[in-house]
Image 1 (spheres, rainbow, N blue to C red):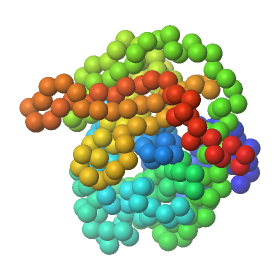
Image 2 (image 1 turned 60 degrees about the horizontal axis):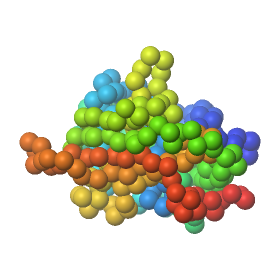
Image 3 (image 1 turned 45 degrees about the horizontal axis):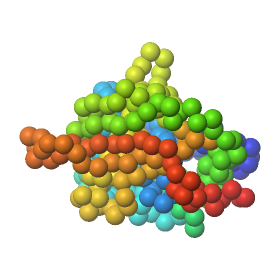
Length: 286
């Protein structure tokens, strides 16, 4: 509660909360995404997943499978509900496409999934993973995580509203059109010259590393989920870029059909219009 009351930006809030959660519920990896409150599509990821040994190849696969998996999908969870993978599948983890096609091979034995939503929308979701070196999550672990969802949701919503208190300079608009071209498997095929500058702000890479288009992977994965009839929300997400500037990511099929019979995916990033920003403000007074 002290952390939720004292932190004003979503990145710092999540970093501090993860360490506090770890004191009560141990885990071997995590992924915590902010989401567009209307579409529930991930936009600003924060993760530490040491189990991914081949990050450039496995990360798009992880995100694609996360969106295509129906078991414990964050869009189906209640506001104070925490779902445990082993419990939900009654021990048959292969019911989860994400576990069957990726996590099982990485040695993951359980996943605790939380969602942060309220009457204004969905503000984020959190997955905690445990590997073979740990025991599965317990009901006590789930109860602790469920107990903190309400104050954390309010804090995340307030952090998003705080971004509107600082007007942006408009410099980012001078960078020009921002578009990524992804394969049906979400591999990067090309991008406009202006794209890396945006990506470095959205998900700052480590020193000497290229930016990772995780936000683009999320909207593209949502497009695949819509096509597979897993979810109906549009493949769009609004995310705070910097200094009061919000951008909107959108995904759509484009180009020629590849050898798998599917078209490539284009992801555009553009400044969010004033009308689109309106629904991001309901929790400002919280």
